[in-house]
Image (cartoon, rainbow, N blue to C red; front, side):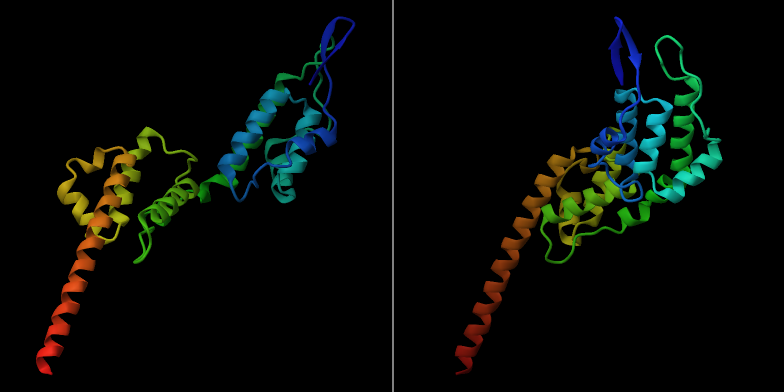
Length: 223
């Protein structure tokens, strides 16, 4: 935080209550580590945190057991490193320590967040809609792929898993009729999957009606 004094910009610590209010809506580190890292990094850079600020921040947003482990692992100082005498700017050592803490946390939390098997096992259930299945797969991808957004490099895998996880009759119809489906945008594949689902449902309904008519005729003939 910066404040004017005598025409100069100086760095002063944030109040604990301010840091608390800014971080109230932070995701939990162990529940959504990727979002947590992103928001923490954004806050630290925008707030121009001093050592004291980081100390308070980590006490608030990092679980106590992890924070104690981090302090031991990175050699977190018990007192603030010397600041610039004129501006009060933090020592370069402070940001270096911050990055060390983040890297150490990633070895403790992020690794277990990547689980491709959970993504690969996500499949459309018997009476589940295309949209509902898509949303479940998207959620699984965000939770277990190690990324919150589907980047271009991940899109081919996502499209492949989406088609493979559809009910067999829908998946086969897409593979048979949608040329180069593997490289199509997900929106196009999703739209075609809905079309296939509707077509199959119509055919099944007609078949069911036909069977019922045949059974009715058979019953009438029997009479």
